[in-house]
Length: 258
Ligand code: ADP
Ligand code: MG
Image (cartoon, rainbow, N blue to C red):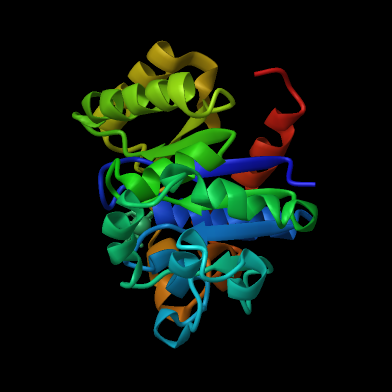
């Protein structure tokens, strides 16, 4: 049974969504969880970073959203990651427009996931850097949102749009949806400003801020070019260890009341 479906979302680009998705997936796999990664970004970075060649895919999440293929037909396996991937490539950019004319347009992913309920413990949805129809499909399908963020000056400001969108989806489309937590990523404790913003986050959001902090670590940035999550590419690195720790925290939090 799928315990939890999480969107990894933040409408800013380059904040660490994809890195969080593939490394949390690999971390969860390492501690025995069955995981599916859904790549909802036409850039296909989560697909490539999982070692699946987006250019060679015959079926992708695009076909699933348009109901030309089932998820079972379209998924593949990350060769090193230990989890499954519903891949994406540039074709997905067209779905944005094509979905508008279709019925249940924001619920396509939700329906598709129901067919694989029995296969996974966790589904992680890597969202594009926008609050678009694709992201909406992710939010409608999910139990919760994990928000990776850098502790920079404008971090809190950018968050309010996302929080409002989540509230609206919660009120109108998906009453299950909630913010699971904010994950501090690319953290450098030597930078005073980052420490200050980190404190601010804690005081605003309390226990919605994950205890685990992901450090800035070059091995995490190098891993995608080898088609591997950092957790697998260099398990001894600080970044990899932080993500395995994060996977444990996610599993542990599920046992506690929200
Ligand atoms: P997004 O999916 O939000 O656009 P990415 O996960 O692709 O963001 O990250 C943006 C860039 O930052 C990538 O080049 C990635 O390798 C790098 N990066 C992400 N997290 C870290 C980290 N903890 N340490 C070092 N580099 C990182
Ligand atoms: Mg990304």
